[in-house]
Length: 353
Ligand SMILES: Nc1ncnc2c1ncn2[C@@H]1O[C@H](COP(=O)(O)OP(=O)(O)O)[C@@H](O)[C@H]1O
Ligand SMILES: [Mg+2]
Image (cartoon, rainbow, N blue to C red; front, side, top):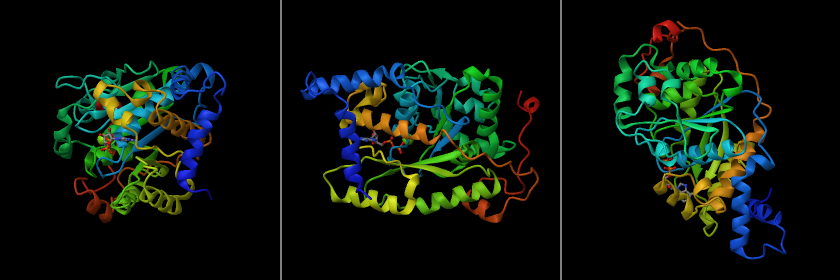
């Protein structure tokens, strides 16, 4: 097995080796060419559509590991390469909304209105400035109170799932997104629980730094509980290594350990630490649109390509648990805010309207 650093270097080299060396022999020209490739991507080689609509929950209760950056940039890359994508911002900080150029000031119709209020998702979906195939459900600061407000809401764990399901059903097939990415807050409360119940799979970004694996056991344990008691389809399908710094031994060690533990779930592409990635949100942009030829951008495009290729064949989803089944004590212990009695009956369309 090649080492992760080597893999990263060859992934970047592969990107450059396709460049005609004679006309494009300066770094700037090469970067410009890469940028053109990224921005006119769909004309050249669209990504393959997934076997079914993929609802991917991007979770890790640690903050600052790249959940938001990955939701934004994978979303933009998938859409630029021809796949309709919806990004749901489930973090009250609203950083995903900012990076996608979507207003999230107080009063903007947002995910809060669909989770706690009576709005349908269709009423709170906004177009993005990034690319036409990408839309976003923004998060406003109202969402900060949602964890508490949801406690008294019927079928509180299912709110997001029902909202997404109804939204998808009501759209004509040719307008349904291929991908729905849900960006979680850095905690394991009711918002993240909603995201884990809503998703069919989890993508965990792991930062190539000290303590990268800390808390991961708890996350995996909670995902397992959700799978056993609320959402049998949920599974960790993708691990993305982020903020890789090739100059440090540590980054390689972390990457190696993650690969040893998670095997083929880990994408070959590693996201390097790149200053353009951290600058982009300040301009209300993803790095893919802000500096398409940068390493941050091209590696997110590569990661999205891998994600799309792996999504062509997916296992069928199991059926959902019967409402009324007792929710086990371990789930209550992991998520103290669940009602903890029985699996709730998802609200019907009439109840919600
Ligand atoms: N590959 C990267 N290179 C440099 N900075 C990054 C990279 N990925 C994320 N960052 C920066 O790190 C910070 C945390 O990332 P973020 O995606 O917000 O994490 P999370 O959503 O998990 O809290 C942000 O300031 C972001 O701009
Ligand atoms: Mg975030």
